[in-house]
Image (cartoon, rainbow, N blue to C red):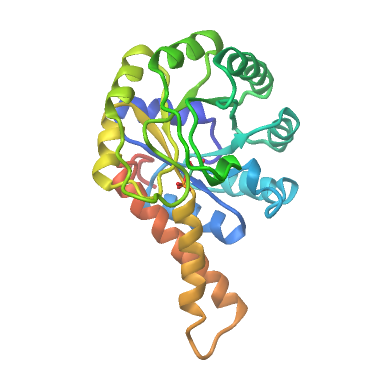
Length: 283
Ligand code: 13P
């Protein structure tokens, strides 16, 4: 149990057709909430932080806490660096013991994406860690951008990137976006199915907030093994505190607990939908 490599976690999910929730965290309460949900649900999980969030949650402070939480958990937990943009930052995460890193070079032409991803693959391999790459650009928040323009993945490019780099996971752009959707997302499952046919590696769905349970299930049935949830987790953290602060009598510690509870509830709900609940075996 405890801290595991993301490759093993995703391969298990791929063989048994369930999804592993990758929950973005920003502080101790959020880390505790996700880990508690995973333990209560007997579910594997991934805790992650995106490079764009480091001005709020410094890596040298939050990173060791994430690793320690995974090491002490009773279920398999991978610790992932989400949307890594610079090699130096990725290296810092690997030094701290993260078991997986994402290199987001999806905004570059494929050739350059492959070149940078290959370099990170070699670096991560020297730490025994996995790499997630991205083909086709998503928009919004966790990747540090503000525009809501997305470029669909080309399954042929997904194949080329996989064959050139051998990464352990690939994120796709199929109509998904980070943050709150302005209108209901319409996912293009054909792109997903085509990519699935072409590459054996686990596929990743970013922009999980706002996607319907039914679409989550369709994605998982068609090759998605890792589902990223950030905004819903941050909203849950905030809502838990807001709700608690309506009480007349309150104190800091119970407010902190309210945040843990609310994040736990959100993560647990997703674990049920992704059918990862129960997959970590019995105690
Ligand atoms: P959401 O904020 O839409 O849940 O996206 C999460 C994500 O993909 C993080 O990389």
